[in-house]
Amino acid sequence: MVQIGLNMGPRHAQILGWAKSFTCKLTAEQMVYDDSDLLGAMSLLWALVKAYLPQEIIKPVQDWLDEGFPTMATQNIPEGY
Image (cartoon, rainbow, N blue to C red; front, side):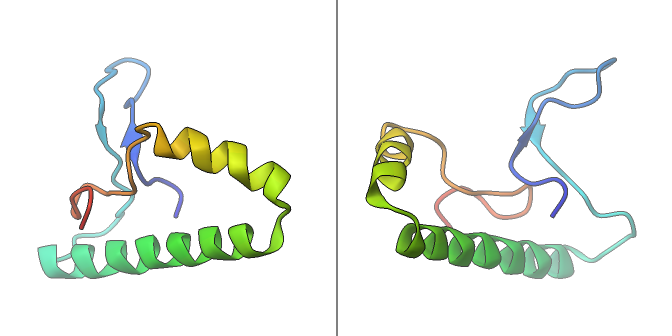
C-alpha cells in the first residue's frame, strides 16, 4: 500500500501517471486482483472513518471530495470500476 493513486514520478523524470508498487513480475490478472484488494481495504477504512469520526470533521472532507476530486483508481483498475 505504499504507492497507489496518482504519482509524479522521480525527481529527475517527473511524469504524471498511476503509481505502481509491484516489485516482482506478476501476471496482469494477479495485479488486478491485488489492486482490487487494496481498493476494497481503502473503502472499508473510509467507511470506518465516516462511522466513528465526528461529522464536524467528516463533512468538510466529504464536501471537498464531492467537488470533483478523482475517485480511487490504480494503474490496473480504472477510475469508477
